[in-house]
Amino acid sequence: MKKTNWYFLLPVLACAFLPGRSQGQAKPAADLVITNAKVWTGDKSLPIAQAVAVLGDRIVAVGSNAAADAWRGPNTKVIDAGGKLLLPGFNDAHVHFVSGGQQLDNVQLNDATSPQEFARRIVERVKITPKGEWILGGNWDETKWNPPNMPTKDLIDAATPDTPVFVSRYDGHMGLANSVALRLAGITAKTPDPPGGQIVRDAKGNPTGALKDAATDYIDKVIPELTHDQRMQVVKRALAHAASLGVTSVQHMEAGYADIAVYSELLRRGELTTRIYAAPLITHVDDHAKIGIGRAFGGPYLRIGALKAYADGSLGSGTAYFYEPFLNQGNNRGLLSDEMQPISLMRDRMMKADEASLQICTHAIGDEGISTILDLYTDVIRAHGDADRRFRIEHAQHMAAKDFERFAQLHVIASVQPYHAIDDGRFAEDHIGHDRASRTYAFRTFLDHGVRLAFGTDWEVAPLNPLLGVYAAVTRATLDGKNPNGWFPEQKLTVAEAVEAYTMGSAYAEFQEKEKGSITPGKLADMVLLSDDIFSIVPTKIHDAQVLKTIVGGRVVWDASTSTRERSQ
Ligand SMILES: [Zn+2]
Image (tube, rainbow, N blue to C red; front, side, top):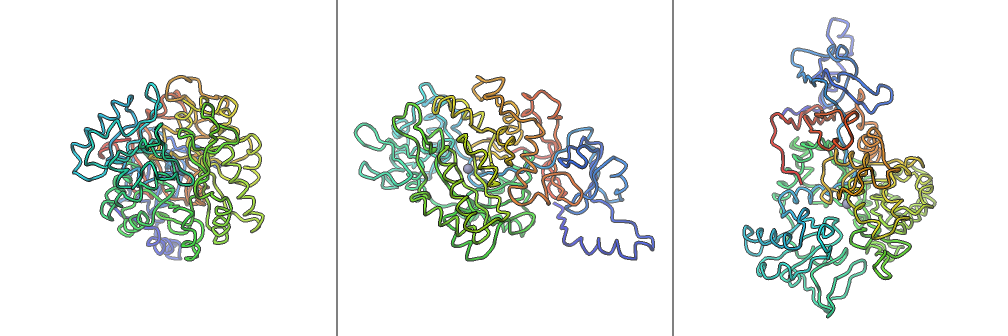
């Protein structure tokens, strides 16, 4: 793979513009020219163009075929786009990149449509799993079963006497452990529920195997960590998967230090093909404050300087934190996370993070969870004064009507995942009723209030494919087919708004809007060539469009005509 590095090119460029040029030296030739494309630039000063020229890892010209041709030299690689649509590369503002990569190899339970099928797939997996090795992942979804009862360990215990199993619910806020896993974790009828978590129990008080939120920590502690080499393999798979989907940047929420070490090694080798902004948990704030590195520190391929925090759980697990109870769940109105117990603990950490100029990205889903985080953000801003901090709320799923205005005033970014809207839209009204559901993933209302949107997927919770996200934001057609004209259709976005949220919006959310997010001279040459013009085809076909080429920093990292596709989730 050709490795081009802008910094090495700088001296060359400088020479080209020195007096030597008047002695007949030509301007440097482009390394790559893409001609005959329909370029949707995302740049208001030139929204549509025909061609792009790239020098090193940067875009140097955008315009007509003739304008780009002027940059051609004998060694310029030329891509004839054949009239296809060229977009800025997609930037996924919220992924769990390593667990996503792992999920590509794990047992697949998401499309299991009955508890029997769920159990059958785990039993099949046991047969090819060495004794004692864990079976993990899965992303099961009991709402696809009839009746939609949470699974229990009884489904799988008989077939897994020597194999620890801990398979996750697709939202990541719940998992099912078999008896071997419970034993290894020391969970018995006597184990108390931890703050911010729940051990689900049967009528006799015995654990059913289902563990919610902080209770999953008991199991996480006994699952062996990936070795560095295993993690490296997982990340390589994730990078290949991202490239195949036109994802040129990701923002890794909850990145572990071991993950960053792998990214850093790949960076040194010139093998990162996706740009990464890594946000470790805010529980590590002291480490980051000590180093003294602030928001968006690093280089074009790897940055740190953001911290991920948790306010609450999820809608489907009944742990998102609401002002009013869930319907049909007694008095349950969700759980504040363990990081919020007490709330002053979170406030102290946020103050520390902000003092150290670190960006804060907080997961908040229920209306009271979101509201409480806005209160805390207000406290931080009052204490430290105005600054360009770009606080984020991840998911911002169920808004209280009173909070849209406040969101805008505090300049908080709504980092949202449109796929969740068509997924949770299947059952949200059953859980919280019509009124609260009307402010669920309220993308239009956010934009109307002047709130900036950043789009992402939450992979491995949802598929990494950005075209599914664009499709979801534009159609709001729930996955169960029950809302073909859109679930709360007044919240639909246009294709252009959705693509912008997935490119410029996400770039802004990581302080990189001057470096990427649009096809503009001077910016990094991150682009994706699609098989179809998603602006003109019927919206229901958007997710059928294929990624023909993915270009990162001028390098073609995915070419549909020559690359083999990773099995998609
Ligand atoms: Zn997430």
